[in-house]
Amino acid sequence: MPVVDVSSSQVLQKAFNTSSSKFQKNVSLSDLTKIWRAVGQAGDGEMSNRRGGLVPKFGTFTFNAAGKPIFVISDIFARSSRVTQTKVSLPGPRPKGKLNMSKLVQMTKYPKQMIEDSIKFIVKAYAEIVNKGRGASVRLGFHPVAEVTCNDMDVSSAFLPDFLARQ
Image (tube, rainbow, N blue to C red; front, side, top):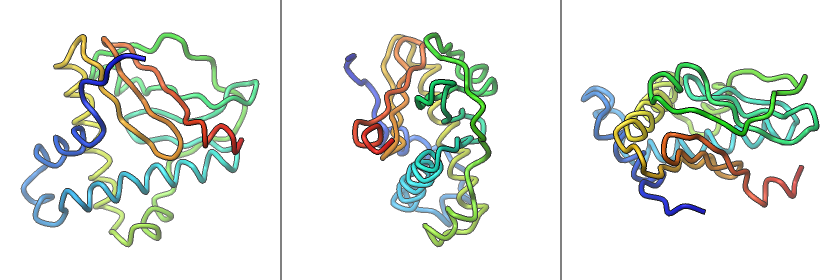
């Protein structure tokens, strides 16, 4: 496994630092971290129910035809970060949809717009770090489901053992 040059917490820090001043007035770094953890937990709920989930402008967590979990980056993210994803199998016939924002609102008690903005700033920061850090390894965790790593401009995902054991 490659050495991680940039961790999830560093991505969240950059997302907070590069967000708009209006956003920073209403959201602390702690709030941003809580929202991102809730995104992972909501994704876990969807995946545990054998459904996929789309993280806007980033990618889709879903299942392949054999029923194994996979992550597929979105075209928008691939263009903005200039990454490629090699070793990915085709998604199967399982239903997939956007993350349930209403569920995230219930889990975090934050307004929907704040959650959407948080996801947008985190994905944008991840893309910027990946694009500028060519040759570096950048990891973004979706705990308790998976970690998405970009190593030398190639995206891969690793589903966590606890998540896989529950499937």
